[in-house]
Image (cartoon, rainbow, N blue to C red; front, side, top):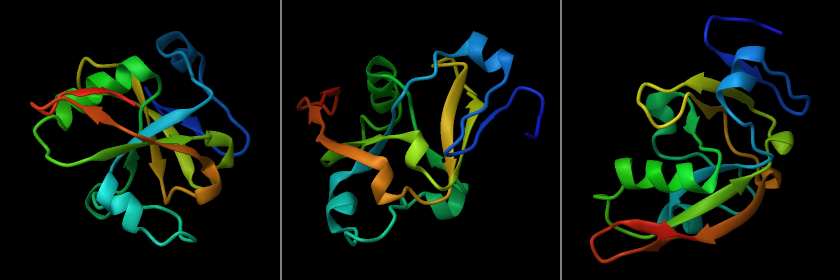
Length: 140
């Protein structure tokens, strides 16, 4: 296992984490990725999923926990029009590397980032996201 200051690495299918990460975040069994519904629905069914931002950022942003997901959605995507889906992911089914990394903001100490495509087998559910008329995310 590689160790770097303030990073927790999780490799699928065996999960490993640092003591610091355990102190900073309650690791959830499932993680979430918020995706534009139109991109998700038009993605080829047999292909692993990649968000449009992956090419520029080199990883896929994810979140753990319902309450935190709502905070993230409303902070970063409230002004983005359109429907969204919440992809519910089982980290043990990912073939790409999953890393819990420090957050540059005050939302959470660590966030899960996937360094590769999301395998279809790792997507256990796609939930329709509910939004208010002003764009506020309300749940799924």
